[in-house]
Image (tube, rainbow, N blue to C red):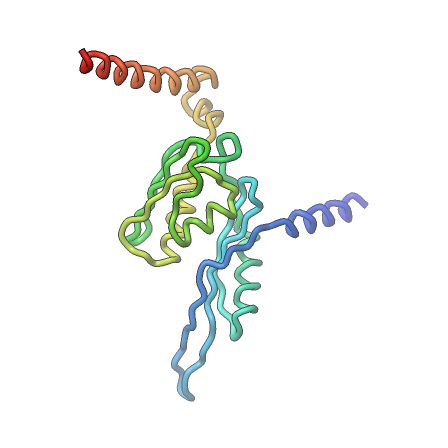
Length: 195
């Protein structure tokens, strides 16, 4: 009986997933008898609460390719630690091929500043405030992979504290102390410049 209930919960969780179609391309395989045309689809799937996955698949028809890619993406989902449920915890970057992706945390009200495939990843993830930039290749597959590598590198403060053998308040104090010092220095420079 317990297993039956778990299956229902899993099915309910999958029903509320957000699917974003990033790209559909017609691909051709040249064979002895002519050309085999198929469609390749890149899909991003997320729950809007910090879990996201991506996959690509091929099929003879577009809907079949999208369905296959969505199923693969559901099996490859990762969890990303979000700050206040709206932005990433710290800045991150990653490189795949010739494409380089930069992700920066943002204050409330900024919105999602991202282009094309990166926007689809952030919307499926549930990020509300983020600034991102892609440099180099505009290849959709490489941009999505680089975004996932950058998101995978984001660690929650608890994990960082455990790695450094420190307590959580010490880590958080350092962050706030560093920000205060920068702010104090800049305000002192401004007041001296005004004199």
